[in-house]
Length: 323
Ligand code: PBG
Image (cartoon, rainbow, N blue to C red; front, top):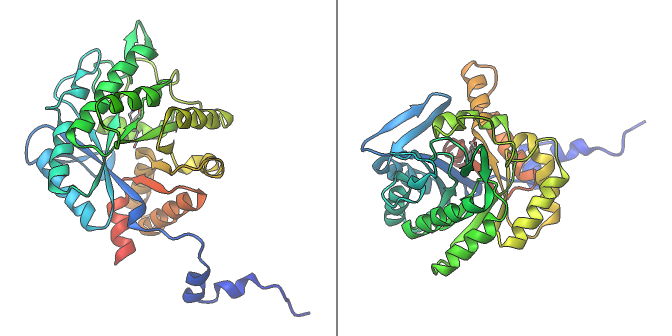
């Protein structure tokens, strides 16, 4: 008997495969995260994140230019401040590396979309994402601090602010503060669905933001939960988020697909530091083909429904995609 139904016909050559390919990846899909530090002419590799660097503001501008030249539309700025205190006040200090980097990059490349990460864990002496009341992160007094951070980043020139703290009501609070300060066109990309994940390990080394006691499970989500993700998305949309994010990416693509099917807003995923470190470590050992694994993973994030992918692989991936 001759087989009649042959899906393999549609895989017969590269051009046929190209014609029926459902998902294509482009440098336009990416946001590249950068870590800025005080000082000048600093470009120090982060040990647990090969090829990712601590950059002084001058070097951050150079990297941002490289990003823009590769056709990547956006960078997200994280910072290591010069001082830390109980409430994280360096997070809204206009002389901190983040605010200085945002304004320097905006000045050099006005068209590059700058995302500011709004959180306090890099800036507090205790490493938690908000103001402490005994050993509990107090929600409502933290909102006032997050408002200051968002407004300071908008003042510096951020196009988008991205709250990653997971306090209740932060999107509404930040929207209100931005609007009061006339930043009606600064968008909010909400880390709406952010899990309490072990995959953030290398980032906490990079950003020196590990909690000094306990963990983040009282504010970030339980990885075992699904419906709670949809609840968080509903709330952040009601509060005025412009872009919804799911984080981490690789182990959470079921959430990405479900959220994509449910909302009419742009959806971002964060391909986090631990996901990056695992790929880099296996590639360094010769156990996997880095280019192939990276492009496959990023394509699958897009297939799952992501419109925007925040990834440390952005520069390499953009080079591979355009060569
Ligand atoms: C700050 C923040 C974190 C990440 C992004 N923003 C760390 C955390 O919540 O502990 C993680 C990013 C990554 O792992 O690449 N709250």
